[in-house]
Amino acid sequence: QVQLVESGGGLVQAGGSLRLSCAASGLTFSSYAVGWFRRAPGKEREFVGTISWNGGNTYYVDSVKGRFTISRDNAKNTAYLQMNSLKPEDTAAYYCAAKATRVVLPRRANEYDYWGQGTQVTVSS
Image (cartoon, rainbow, N blue to C red):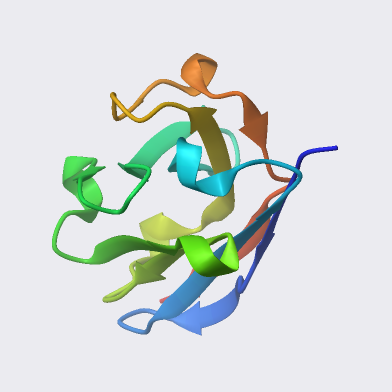
């Protein structure tokens, strides 16, 4: 069966960095766009960014542009979310998701086919 497993979350001070990983199995990873979402306590799930099947295109929400970078290694069936200059408001559970497409960069949660279980990121001030 398809599995997406996030890792790399943790506690970091404001201004610090973390790199999240999303390891995929059970699917042809190179046929999928990968998105990252987050949900902060008491808030709705928020789109963070997405990367195309071959890594050639990315899109980010304005609040993370210039600080977060999404990449992927199709040989390793893994996508990454590099988070720099972290702020307390970045505190959330982060989720990766995959959509079978080589055409679009999906931005809405309901466009995605598979989801990981999430990893917690906590940024202290």
